[in-house]
Figure (cartoon, rainbow, N blue to C red):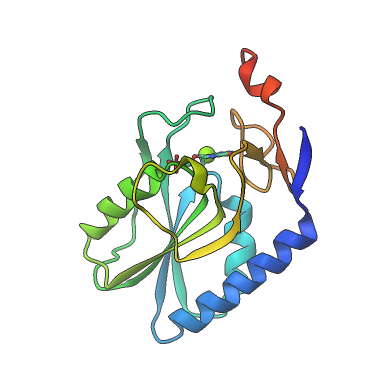
Length: 177
Ligand code: IMP
Ligand code: MG
């Protein structure tokens, strides 16, 4: 680890603010929250407990990284089970980086004809964007560094850290054990 980028209290305050905003925007109808595995675990749990609205929750599994830090081919590891047709959908992801994951998932979701889709991400790394995709709710804009913790991983590790930290580049440039 190099340094803590976002501490626990800072994350908690921001997640509550996002939840309040989402609550105002979605108040009229039951929502379907679609969360992308596995990076959203902590963010999702903290976010939805502050959204006091009727909702159904589903997960989609998408994996883009293998064990490295560069985006690779996208693989769907879990399909949606809930019917989102005509529904208000909140799509939740941990971080918007190149945008490949979200643009691919959004295209797939739109084919299911929801009434509307809003995108919520904890982190946004605009420096690396290659796709024209934007999030409606963003926790924090961060610089172009590889971060871990609060659900985010490097090679499936560090997800359990309660804060978000920048990973030392030596860690991801060395061969993985
Ligand atoms: P994108 O498809 O390039 O936008 O990447 C999105 C996915 O890459 C996220 O859902 C994360 O799983 C992963 N990712 C991108 N940047 C980071 C990072 O700094 N740390 C950990 N995971 C990341
Ligand atoms: Mg990930």
